[in-house]
Length: 196
Image 1: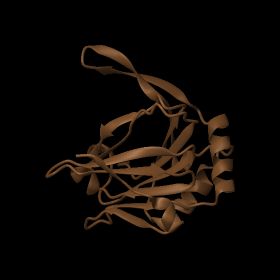
Image 2 (image 1 turned 120 degrees about the horizontal axis):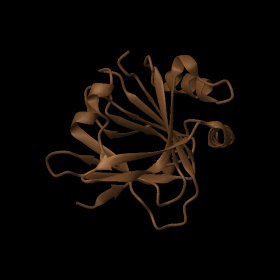
Image 3 (image 1 turned 120 degrees about the vertical axis):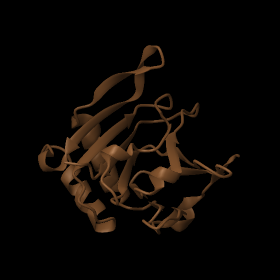
Image 4 (image 1 turned 60 degrees about the vertical axis):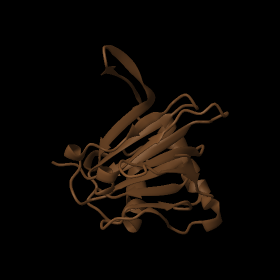
C-alpha cells in the first residue's frame, strides 16, 4: 500500500499522534527545539562525535553499514558534545530514565537504514525511544507489521522529536530509505533505556 505522507509543517511545533497504543504510540513534534539551537547541535556532533564506519555480515558476505554511527552512555557524555543538553530537553517532553544514546550520521541520500523495529532485548519496557533529528530533513517510513500494513511517510525536520513507545516496536517497523534527491547530511540522536 502506498505511503500516506503527512504535511506536518501545518502544525508548527504541535505534537502529532502518528500511531496510537496504550504506551503513547508514535508521536512527532516538528518544532521541538529552535532552528538555531538545532544547527548548533548538528555542527558540534558532526565535527566532534566519535563517528565509526561499521561492517556487518548479511547472508553470505560482509557489507558496509550505510551510515556512520557513534554511541555514548548518559553517565559518560563527552563534555565537548551537546548530549547532556539534548537529553535535558528530551526528558522535559518525554520523561524516562534514558541511559544511552545512539548517533547516526546520514552523509547523503545514499545513506539509509532498512525497515526494522528496535530489538526488544536491548530495551527496557515500558520506556520509550526518543529520536532527535538534526541537519537536512529525511523521510522516515513507519509501517504496520500486520493487517493491511499501512505505511506512513514522515519528513523528519531539523530540531524535531519523534517518540516511539516500547509497545510500538511489536506492532510497527520504521526506516530511512535511500533517496535520489540532492541530500545534505543528517544526524539522528536516539535516546533509549537499555538494561544495565
